[in-house]
Length: 201
Image (cartoon, rainbow, N blue to C red):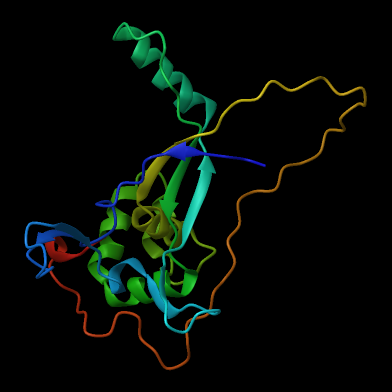
């Protein structure tokens, strides 16, 4: 089984605040407070224990490219560090397709920002539907929203050569399943197309 080590940045999600004075028994205790709505965190009752709540945030773990790892190694060598630990994977926030579509409809200024940032690489992006999950525009919006939470390290094990020939097979691309939002709910109720500086993404 794969195992990973690393540190999660709890300040990476959208709208996080560091507060104290919340706990009356310890007014100096510091809390990291994360808003649920702009991070698509679902607060639910535990299925086996109705007295316990769980807060779920969707994440993806992606392997880092060899090019990225080589840049990390080269940069460390230039600083004179020969024993650098190179991260192997990246953990990102992962918004559902339905949530990204709701954001695209609610925040047209965000959509325009993403179009402007990508129009030189893909001029066709200017006329694409931001709610069509098959377009480059939708994927660019998702990439903008999916913030990095952690760089992870996977121990590299020495593998014994197999006596059997390994066939060459195609590798499937990354895919995410569609999670339908609950009927009649607006995940962004109460939000308007605010000034760009006020948007969490």
